[in-house]
Length: 608
Image (cartoon, rainbow, N blue to C red):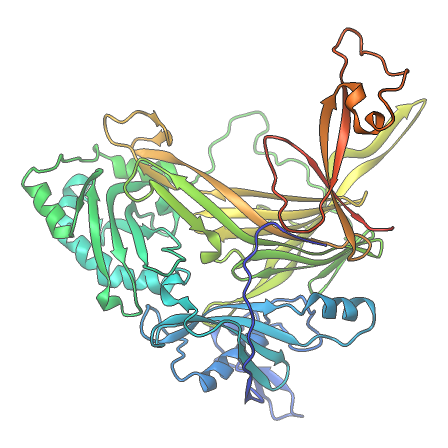
């Protein structure tokens, strides 16, 4: 049974053309001694962690491997003359935006997994931003099979999704920086230097643009604000912004046609150009602002994390660590087995963590559990951040990198690799950590004459996902009693808006946490796809609601003439009783949760 909490669906149309039969592995060369291969001396940097395979050794649920991405790149070099892999800025050329596994149809996968059916062929879903098309657009292709003679087919029609609806990426940011931000901020240098403690573009200031700039495709408006730069980091800057904002129309694939407008200074504006803002500043048409002395130094000292000197008793002594003498779980590729559990875990480049074929004691209970999107809605007293939506698939929820041992995961954890596309294969062998944890709680206990119990032990599959200025933790915990717990949280740094003298320290959108920094009201909403197969694909989906009524009105008693004689009042309480109202969902679509009326949702195997 499939419950789609949040999903994006593409309709597929086929138009296959055989293009490539073979490819050369750029990470290895023939050593001319028996025909075997050995690593190249001058291999590309992404070959450093090369350890992937292609073909039948790969699970049908695995993400793209290094070799598959290499084959894909060679394929597009031949097939698309406008394809570039070296572009650093947006422009009138085509480039690959994302490479994701294209999972087989569920029926074919189950036939292979359960009934000794044929192994489904492997295909990849490739998203291409086509800046060279007329008009520019986004295309999604099905490419495969891997291994074999590669073919390509369109999953959407040309022109169906306009270029302006693409996800924001580093190419667009680089073009914004060169074409708009650098020349416009050079105009504003006198204003910036005088107002913000000597900071100006090229000397301690950076910028950020909200994302996505718009998925509707009617326009592409970049909302930009300036930030204080923190050397050696890329996104700590979002913690402390400065009150200069502007917008950019970034329609089309030629950055030379982009323009900026709606300039604000300390919430005063809008001004049509940077020059108009500077003129208003110099003529006294707007109120000037300036940082207090040493503010920039104070911000950087306060924000950069440092371990405090702790004088508490025995504080230098670390807490005891529990490390098993040997693991009780096994990892075969991306499939994990532990104490009756078995599951496949990987990461999809844009969507993020994905689990497939989850089984307990040999019985499948879930075909797929995966993140589809993480959205953030920001509110602030600010010209740019007043009402902003972030879609974190824009940043790549699945671009997980190697974890920090001892911080993200226990030092005794074992790891599963993750590979994603970033102009070439980006391979990270320690991206997903697997470990057992002893919670210190009982899974079950009873002390009644005899004392007995079972200590709670979980197997954890954990992702640490850097997305913008947030670092998400997503994990699935498998318990000995057959339960699964999914948890997710955020750490890293917050995004702020500017506090001006005279503003309240608490307003309708946040609270001041530093001299000129307000924490913005926002939330993180995780959209999941949940495809449960409880002892088979035919499942019941039942909503249990706890209600109360007069005993005569309880449905099972009302049908027989009223309450039984044994039903009496509870002490001096009103003549009421609680009962369960069960509602069977007839279809998988249309169920809506009302958070003000808590309900319990049960999915069970039908006729089991």
